[in-house]
Amino acid sequence: MNTDELELLLNGTEESDILEFKAAVPWDRKLFVKDILAMANVIDGGRIVIGVEDGTFARQGLSPEQLETYKIDEMRDSIAPYADPRVVFRLHKVKDADERHYAVIEVTPFEDFPVICARDGADVCEGVVYFRSRRRRPASAPVGSSSDMRDIIERAAVLSAGRLQRIGFVPQIEERPDYDAELGGL
Image (tube, rainbow, N blue to C red):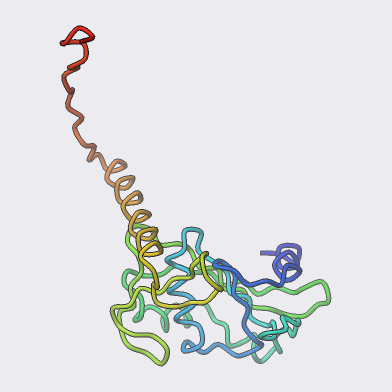
């Protein structure tokens, strides 16, 4: 991610199912675990931009001390016990056009199976699937509707079918009789 890409995110200043803004804070797993788990269950994944004031979306940026707390290996290690299966994310440290520093966590969508919370935490519960719905106000929350759960399950089924095809498991398609032809157009 570069300055231009960050500016595109900041200029929109609107949260969505794939974009979350967080105030200028040092890394704290408790503040981010639910958002990371939820974005892993969204079809396109998502991004969390840290350094934007809550509510007003005013640009704050991160102090050098705050920015230093964002260490990708430590972040992954602290999130891993909460995700089943694992969640994949990257960290970008980038400046805006005014030279303010931001941390951007880019969460990749799940690969085969939806991410389920694997243990209780300050803001998460074991066994819960977190999600950011396009149908409601943007928020990381437990799956709250049958249509959201159906979307997650359908996506998992498509990904699993694709994986099975890639490794050589292709369903046998049997030829069905053509009853119209047999009946001669009756």
